[in-house]
Image (cartoon, rainbow, N blue to C red; front, top):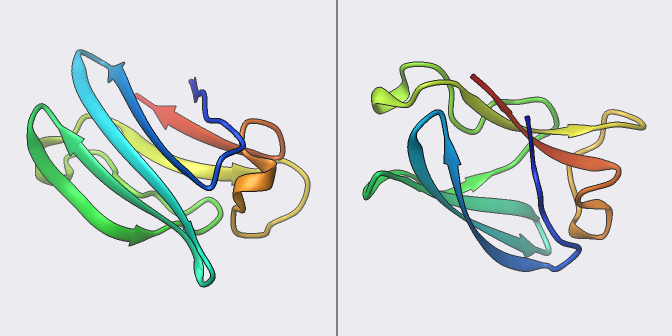
Length: 94
Protein backbone atom coordinates (compact mmCIF):
# COMPACT_ATOMS: atom_id res chain seq x y z
CA UNK A 1 0.00 0.00 0.00
CA UNK A 2 1.33 3.43 -0.94
CA UNK A 3 1.12 6.08 1.78
CA UNK A 4 0.55 9.41 -0.02
CA UNK A 5 3.22 12.05 0.53
CA UNK A 6 3.65 15.57 -0.85
CA UNK A 7 6.60 17.23 -2.51
CA UNK A 8 7.35 19.28 0.60
CA UNK A 9 10.61 19.06 2.57
CA UNK A 10 8.75 18.83 5.89
CA UNK A 11 5.36 17.21 6.36
CA UNK A 12 3.17 15.49 8.89
CA UNK A 13 0.88 12.57 7.99
CA UNK A 14 -1.74 10.68 9.94
CA UNK A 15 -2.80 7.33 8.46
CA UNK A 16 -4.49 4.16 9.66
CA UNK A 17 -2.48 1.07 8.76
CA UNK A 18 -3.95 -2.30 9.71
CA UNK A 19 -6.02 -0.65 12.48
CA UNK A 20 -2.92 1.19 13.77
CA UNK A 21 -3.09 4.99 13.97
CA UNK A 22 0.24 6.17 12.58
CA UNK A 23 1.55 9.71 12.85
CA UNK A 24 4.51 10.22 10.54
CA UNK A 25 6.69 13.33 10.48
CA UNK A 26 9.01 13.54 7.46
CA UNK A 27 11.88 16.03 7.50
CA UNK A 28 14.34 16.76 4.70
CA UNK A 29 17.75 17.88 5.96
CA UNK A 30 21.00 18.47 4.11
CA UNK A 31 22.14 15.00 5.22
CA UNK A 32 19.01 13.14 4.06
CA UNK A 33 15.39 12.46 4.90
CA UNK A 34 14.51 11.66 8.51
CA UNK A 35 11.26 10.43 10.06
CA UNK A 36 9.51 10.29 13.39
CA UNK A 37 6.76 7.68 13.73
CA UNK A 38 4.22 7.39 16.53
CA UNK A 39 1.81 4.45 16.48
CA UNK A 40 -1.25 4.42 18.72
CA UNK A 41 0.35 7.14 20.87
CA UNK A 42 3.59 5.13 21.32
CA UNK A 43 6.84 6.54 20.00
CA UNK A 44 8.34 4.03 17.57
CA UNK A 45 11.20 6.01 16.01
CA UNK A 46 12.50 9.56 16.33
CA UNK A 47 15.00 11.03 13.89
CA UNK A 48 15.42 7.81 11.89
CA UNK A 49 17.30 8.35 8.63
CA UNK A 50 15.50 6.97 5.60
CA UNK A 51 17.37 4.76 3.13
CA UNK A 52 16.07 3.21 -0.08
CA UNK A 53 14.31 -0.12 0.55
CA UNK A 54 15.42 -0.29 4.19
CA UNK A 55 12.50 -0.74 6.61
CA UNK A 56 11.86 2.21 8.91
CA UNK A 57 9.49 0.07 10.96
CA UNK A 58 9.08 -3.64 10.50
CA UNK A 59 7.04 -6.62 11.64
CA UNK A 60 6.90 -7.07 15.41
CA UNK A 61 9.10 -4.04 16.10
CA UNK A 62 7.72 -2.79 19.41
CA UNK A 63 4.39 -4.39 18.53
CA UNK A 64 4.03 -2.79 15.09
CA UNK A 65 2.24 -4.96 12.51
CA UNK A 66 3.77 -4.73 9.04
CA UNK A 67 6.64 -2.67 7.67
CA UNK A 68 7.14 0.85 6.34
CA UNK A 69 9.86 1.89 3.91
CA UNK A 70 10.65 4.25 1.03
CA UNK A 71 11.25 2.72 -2.41
CA UNK A 72 13.01 4.40 -5.32
CA UNK A 73 11.03 3.47 -8.45
CA UNK A 74 13.79 4.51 -10.89
CA UNK A 75 17.15 3.63 -9.38
CA UNK A 76 18.39 2.70 -5.94
CA UNK A 77 19.01 6.08 -4.38
CA UNK A 78 17.94 7.41 -1.02
CA UNK A 79 14.83 9.60 -1.06
CA UNK A 80 14.63 13.33 -1.56
CA UNK A 81 11.43 15.30 -1.06
CA UNK A 82 11.41 16.53 -4.68
CA UNK A 83 10.57 12.98 -5.80
CA UNK A 84 8.01 12.10 -3.13
CA UNK A 85 4.85 10.32 -4.32
CA UNK A 86 6.39 9.74 -7.72
CA UNK A 87 9.93 8.48 -7.85
CA UNK A 88 10.12 7.88 -4.09
CA UNK A 89 7.12 6.02 -2.66
CA UNK A 90 6.39 5.49 1.02
CA UNK A 91 5.21 1.89 1.21
CA UNK A 92 3.34 -0.04 3.91
CA UNK A 93 3.48 -3.84 3.71
CA UNK A 94 1.02 -5.57 6.07
